[in-house]
Length: 172
Image 1: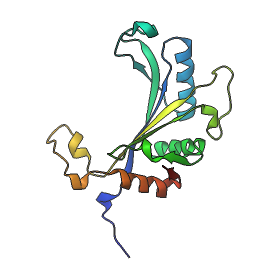
Image 2: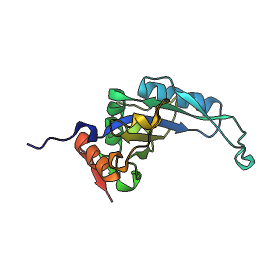
Image 3: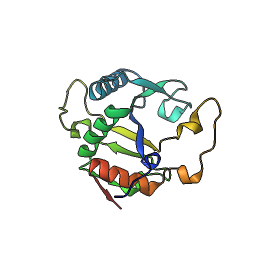
């Protein structure tokens, strides 16, 4: 029986669900309502950083909304999201640190969610941050330390963890 070091077992740190609308107004309110229904959390508005006249975009204007999920809520939402993607994601969605992001074209692809004519159709981006236990020393306020490369999560480890945990397949 092989014992695995518990400090080398990857975990899901957070899942961020984002809907980018592109403008403020009624459409943004509908997106916030949808995110609230899907996650059970109150969404936070995302603000534009630049002025882009060609897109009619002003600086500091709300253009989207997002929700951050952690723990069991994050895992449950990821399970639903993988079902919407037919339990298959591409290997290219993983970055070198093991984090991954993918999109869902329509929220009605998720199981148990029905179309609401008052909201319309929205897609969303799902970004997942993966880490190993002990990663906090890099982010803490007092006595920040550098993490040695042997303790950093790698792309292959993250892919294996997601395959085992959620039973999904990774395509090229």
